Structures are given as C-alpha cells and as structure tokens.
Amino acid sequence: MTEGQGLRERKKGRTRQALIAAAVRLFAEQGYERTTVAEIAKAADVTTRTFFLHFPAKEDVLFIDAEARVELGLRIVAERAPGAPPTEVLAAAMQAMIDDVEANDLASGIAALRAELVLTEPAILRRMLQLLYDGQARLAEALARAYGGDLDPIDAAALVGSLFGAVNAAAMAALRAGGPPERVRAAMTRAAALALRR
Amino acid sequence: MTEGQGLRERKKGRTRQALIAAAVRLFAEQGYERTTVAEIAKAADVTTRTFFLHFPAKEDVLFIDAEARVELGLRIVAERAPGAPPTEVLAAAMQAMIDDVEANDLASGIAALRAELVLTEPAILRRMLQLLYDGQARLAEALARAYGGDLDPIDAAALVGSLFGAVNAAAMAALRAGGPPERVRAAMTRAAALALRR
DNA sequence: CCACTTAACTACACTCGATGTACTAATGCA
DNA sequence: TGCATTAGTACATCGAGTGTAGTTAAGTGG
Image (cartoon, rainbow over all chains, first blue to last red; front, side):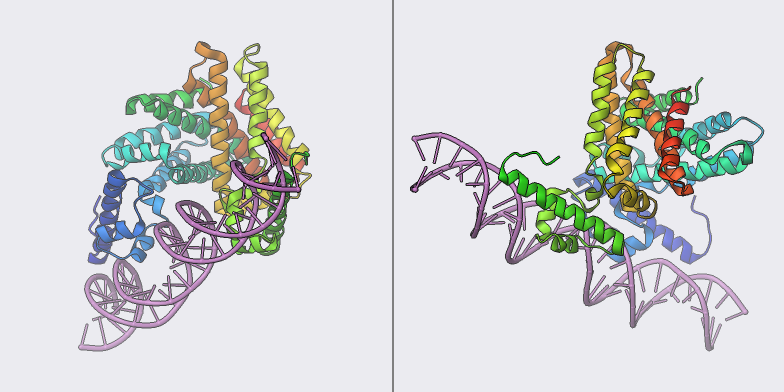
C-alpha cells in the first residue's frame, strides 16, 4: 500500500492519510455538517488550502477508493469481452466490484461511516450518485467499444444503467433497513441478478 | 396554471416566475457558473434572500417540475396496483412520466436549457441525479406498500432502480449523441422496455 | 371601517466551501 | 553544487446559503 517511491511522494501520502484520518474522526465525533474543512486541516496540521490540493471537495475524503473500483470494473470488461455476451461480462464486473467493497473498504473505518452518512447527509448522497454515474458511463462506453458494432452505445448505457441503478437502489434500501453488511451485500448481488435476468 | 387564489398568492407566483425567467435568460446568455444568484435576483428585482425563499438552491430553478412528475408516477401506481403485475404498473408509470416531459417541459424553454446544462455543469447533473433518486425511492416505497407482502421492499427498490437507471443512462447517452428530442424520447422508451424485459 | 394576524420580502451580518496567486522550502536530479 | 520541480503556505477573494429582526401589505374577524 505504501509504495516506496521518493521521499516527496511518501510525505505527500502521509499528509493525505493524516487528512483522511482527521476527517473520519471528526465526522464521526461531531457529524459531517458540523465539521469544517478548516478544522480537518488544523487537526492534520496543514492549512485549509492544502486540503483542497488533495481532494477536490470536502465530501471526497470519503470516496478515495471510487476510482480504483471503476478501474477494476473496466479491467474485467477489457479482459472478458468479447468472448462472452455483454450481460455475463457485466455480471462478472459488478460482482468483482461488490466483492472489492468487502475486501478493501471494510478494513478501513471509512465504509461504515460512509454508509451512515449516505443516508443522512444529502451532500454525501449526491457525491455518491455522481461517482456512480460517472463510473457507469465509463463502463458503458468501454463495453460499447469492446463489442463494436454488435452493441449500440445507447443500449450499452441502458444496460449498465439498469444494473447500477438496481444494485444501488437495493443497497440503499438494505442500508435503510439497517441490516448487517452481509445483508447489504446479498441485496446487491440479488439486485444484479434481477437486473440482468437470472 | 395561474389559479386565482388570493392576491398575495398571485404576487408570490409572479415573483417566482420573474426569478425563473431571469435565471433561464441569464444562464442561456452567460452560462450557469458565470451567473450569480445575486444577478438573478437583481434581474427579477428582488433581493438575493428572496431567491432562497423560493428555491432551496441555485440549481432548483431548473427543476421546478420534478415534484409534479414524481406525483404523476405515484398516482399511476396507486391507481393500477395491484390489479396488474408490478412491472406493468411500472412500465405505465414510466411511460406517463416520459410523455409528461414532452407535454409540459418542451413548452417552457427550460427543457432545452436543462438538457444542455446537465451535460456541461456538474452541479446540475448532481441535482438531477439526486432528484431522480429521491423520486425512485418514493415510487419504490409506494409500489412495495401497494403490493404488501407480495413484493419485498428491497426487490421493489431494485426493480424501480433498474428502470430509472436504464432510462436515465439511455437519455443521457442520447443527449450526448446530440440527436433531436424525439430521438432522446425514443431512447428512453426503448431503455424502459429493455429494463422491464419486453 | 378598524384592529389584529399572517406572510412575503427586505436589510444586514455571517459562515463556510472553494479558487487564484505569489511565495517558501525541501526534494529530486544532472 | 546548482537548477528544476513541487508540496505546502499565506493571503485575498468570491459566491452560495442561513439566521434574524424589521417592514409592508394582504387576509380576516368584528
């Protein structure tokens, strides 16, 4: 995780981790809205400006893994297509992304906090929805490109949108219902199967 | 549209319309980001504070019809369920909402502007995604309630999420492709059919 | 016609997220 | 050793959004 690289990189990484840790702690302690970026920066012993050199917005401290997860999905699409039908490729990509949540996210304390905040803080929900949309758009484009003329780009978008929409809605409903993480995960897998007809 | 009501109501409505007109004009003329709420208010001859008495946020001037469209969907669910299977009810609700865009939205100049800004302004996209999510969550809950024990709430969420996800993704892809409004509408209808298996 | 209430709007102050810019200092590199 | 690069700082500024108290006019009951 902490690759060597140069000293500069490592220092930057430490600052980043300090910001994340401070943000997570403060969000948990006093709530998201009641925590200012200035506070987070101060707790991490940097200036407010530095926070925004690391994260485009306040909410993004909680979504540090989003990009990697999208790339995981893209990789699977690139690997499998076009040997298998699009729905199967998508099913595999989605399952990998769902499993990735468990593998990486639960280790950090971020997942639980984010699960809570996504239900209570509109700003967090909005950012999640936007990241999901961006990710699904990229995935749809990759899929359409992989299948060339055999898959209309708009149909690809509809297919991926349907899958993401189902999985996200099921996850949110399960979260709202308050079950344990496995229950949420099960709901996501079930929703994926439902969206891709199984 | 302009019901009589009292004079007070009518005045309030006029202020609202003035704000919308000013906002649409300014967004079109100089872009969304480059237009401040203060400018909009000034053009409508009210104070900035008044703007926020009418709209919760800057983006919401462009989504004045969202609530009515959700209620249209809810009404159709309430009327049809549970005589027909959920997917049919949903198909009817979605088709009604799609048609409603054409009926109401295109008349005002807002639809075209919003279609443009949703592609170029992240803030507008975020708000649209949030409104879609809120709407679909309400629809899913209504559906689950309508079918009682015959439809698991999480499955209902997945079903509605799948439909909304497909239709939205297709609409966005069609918009990005740049076709005329009918093309976008056709893409939405096709995506709905695809998500609900036809 | 006259009190009394209600509510839209104003005036003003303020918080906070986010960005631009010029500068400092330390790291990387030849 | 000298130069380029870059993380971080200091400072200024903008704009969205909110709290609050006050003003004015519309609604209401006698």
